[in-house]
Image 1 (cartoon, rainbow, N blue to C red):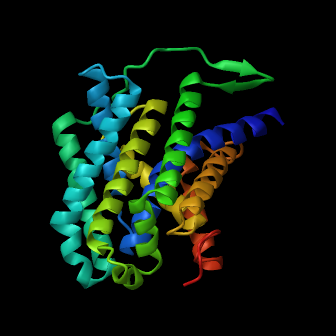
Image 2 (cartoon, rainbow, N blue to C red):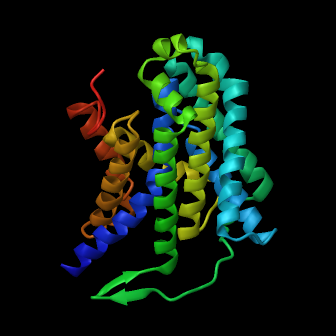
Length: 286
């Protein structure tokens, strides 16, 4: 029983970190109506921006986290403005394929600048805590607390601020939002900044848990998409729920299969959801 409870606990902690970029992905899909596959590379860029701020400038984790958000958001808006926005009239599939090309380009830029070595954040080493036979790392717990605060800020932004309400309005009905003098293009760019910034923050938090290298985001891409699809693309609460389910599912799978097959959970989830409930758990049938 203890190994199962430990796996569920680990899954909840991993899922809460995965939820941050998944929320960014689903927010962009809700407003822009295409899947942005560059979100994995932007998670890598955010992680490296935070790592650079932490190890070179000596910034602590919160300022480094802000750097991750800002740099990833700026690069995400640049990609959107220079490449993806021009292709929107050609359809969602064309834009999605272009985002894959942008992802490959961004990862290779990171590799050219920083090389292929694994890099770790400069954080103090602390012993894990043990209670009732369970193990919890202080760094893991801190990351979860940061993730929960960020989720609360995102929900507050979408519920209480003018721009957040405008994003929800454009996501629900762009034509009706335009009648109420909301500019869908400005809202779209604000959503890209929010979504890609969250990807950068997610990359940093996941990097704090282990280490980072230029392909970190590529490995995260499948679980991020699986979480968003499972919860329902376009649903922010769905992305959170999907991330927790994926996180727990991956950790429980380690009890009966090798770790090398862990990523298969994401494939299985996407296949099952798309074949049985394409709109996801909390998504609306369109």
